[in-house]
View 1: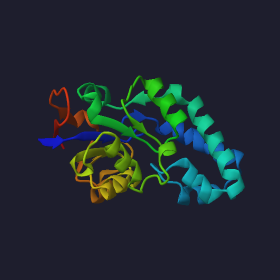
View 2: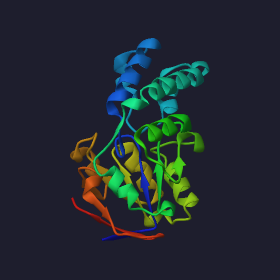
View 3: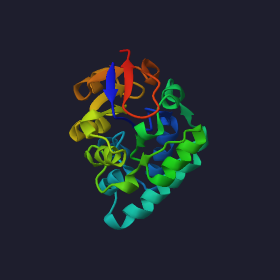
Length: 216
């Protein structure tokens, strides 16, 4: 049993199955902006904010517009999304002041996605709220601060190495889900690896701290 002041969740690939929609959006974006696909593959990484990827692929004067275009492509595909196993059950068991979503999406895109799948987070940290995105620790440090929680007493759930690196740098305990990335790639960055959030149970609580049990 783990006692935590707060549980912090990545969104895409952790709570929400958005992989096919994201891949389709990026593929269209790469074609529209005539970006070399091999170069894109080398630079892009799951869990890294789109603006950081665009900044490495395009001239500086095109980054803002290109990022907005990608955002719109992804918003248009939000209705295609579904929640991953265990998501609804775990979130429903948590007090509102004990959890948050921490995503590399922009706020408009994050709002479109949570609305599409019927998730109502009490707190959401997005790419628009930080100056440095994952793998920098700023997103998770900000979430902990907003919840008045010690980062060292937070548990972070992530599906990508960049997000796990961000959480570890913030000092949080890390749980990796193998929904998008093989376990062997996640184990070096995670304290625990599970298949999905269906392997996590939370004891009933009205306010934090919360007690969770993880079933590897």
